[in-house]
Each structure stands twice: as C-alpha cells, then as structure tokens.
Length: 331
Image 1 (cartoon, rainbow, N blue to C red):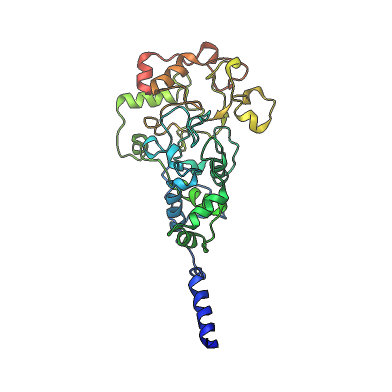
Image 2: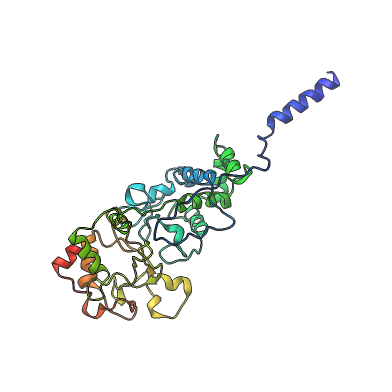
C-alpha cells in the first residue's frame, strides 16, 4: 500500500478516536443568586463559585439514579421536592433495604449552614455530599464506578466541560456541581416573609401565634429558632429532652466532638422550622408524626435530665405548659 495512504489512514483513525477538544479559555456564566430580604449573605467557597452551567449540571446529577450501586436511587429519592426536599417517613431505607437511624433532613436554605448532618460531622456542603455514595446503608456505590458510568453518558462529558473547563469527571467535580445546585434551593416566601415585606397582614391568630413563639412565658421557641434572620434556626446542637437519659441510644454531637460535656450527649442540630407542613415526621429520629405532636411534646412531654439543654428552661415541669388556645395560635 502506498506509504502516503497508510499515513493518511493512521491520521484519520487518530482524529476519529480523539475526544472533542476542551474549550480553550472557557469561562462559565456566573449564577446570579438572589439573597432574600432579611437573610444574611451566603458564603460561597472560592474554589466552587456558582455558575449557570454548574447549577444545571448539579440539578441533573441530583436526580440521577446512577449515583447508587444498583442504579435505583438518586439523591432525590430521600430528598423529595414534595417533602421539602426531605422524606415523609421516619428514617430512610437504602438500596439494600437497610433502614437508617435518622430522619432525612430537608435541603432548603442549607447554603447558610456551617455544619451538616444531624451531628454536624461535615463542615462543608461538598464534604457532606461525598458520604452517601459510599455509605453501605444508603446509595452503596463507589466514586470510581459512578464517574465511569457518567463518562459513558452522551451528555455529561460536555456538561462537565462547560461547568469546569474540561470533561474530566470525578468525585470532586460531582460534589461541587451538586453543592452549587443545593445552594440555589432557597425558601423565603411564606406568609411570614410576605408580612415582613409589607405585602400582607397576618390574621389575629397568626399574630398571636407569633407573639407566643417569641415569648419567654409563652412557647419560648425563639432562642433556638430565631426569626430575626429568616432561617428559623441558630444552627447549634442541642439535646431537647426528646428521650429520658437512660433511653438515649444515639450520642449525636458527642460522637463527633468527643466532648465530656453531658449536654452534648444526644445533642442534634437545631432544624429550621420552615416548610413544616411538608416535612413530617419530625425530630432526628422521625418519632413525632404531626405538628400537633411537636407542640404537645414541647408543652408537656420534655424529659428533664443531665443531658437536656439548658435552653429547655421549662424541662423540670415537662415543658412550657401551653393551653389549647395557645397551641392553636402557635400552630
């Protein structure tokens, strides 16, 4: 065969096998994140700025079941939009049918959180996203296998290239993209927010309920769930007296810090009170089924003991002792 023809064939094969060229000097489009009135600024990691392309990639990954070992579950399987991006069962079950021990936390407004998981063991959102993939009772996969599956997809390589400048797919880029998407999931348009913006007037019962919420002699909710910055959580870790001292089996925050402080034993992250109508059941173990159950617990069923947080100021009498009218107003 003519030598020139052979050279031509080799070059043709080389070109046909080559990946699409990476975008040269490509800059993704900055994402314009609107911070709601009354909310603090959100701290965005310098190495993972929000971009239109990154958020779109993260949204696609969040719903992709290939992030699980048997391709049957996605992030959205336990963080469902209809449930405030949580789940309406006490504890989640992973791909192998093994039940977890804690309630699936809703994912709105988590861009403001300084720690993640009920016990705060992750200090960044990206770090939090890493864990469920490898967890044997959750998605039970491995990051190498996940990356390989995504590389075979017709769309993902180009989406990663547009978001990060090259088509390389790995755990770091996957978690960064999902984190970008989650930071855009902001809840800030309740009747309370509309009232703060002067767009409506609260009903007399709603206003009285707000007064009970913020009263030391009423429901006394405001210490842990302040309304002043719109997030309805102070992001601390507290044992709220859900269980008697001898019945606590989950060490919570203490397992992370190793502290000898008895108040950290069984302490869990203070959750936001937004979207409660969608996120039942409640508490870290999903043991309270309704909002009425929660209000009744804080009124009359708080356990007083060495681990109960000091801000549970009425624990010695079982709670804040709300009457029926106060409970209805608070709800």
